[in-house]
Image (cartoon, rainbow, N blue to C red):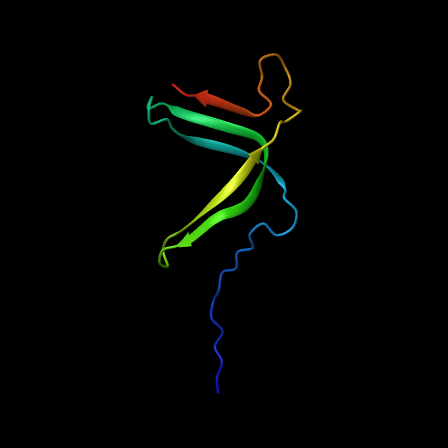
Length: 88
């Protein structure tokens, strides 16, 4: 009898307590065709609400992200939640 271990990649999803994160998205607004940067100052990921595997090369997941107010963002006219910047 012989034994050969297979290689594996292990992904632990949301193990332990939820950590707060900040997110920055950089992309193109399809309607205006302008580049946009979106900053979410503070939030937490929730549990995956869907997970699908379509063969070895493609998989997708739907995650929820709860946006929280950031008390460090202070000043008149400043959002404590999200800032969107349209680039020229």
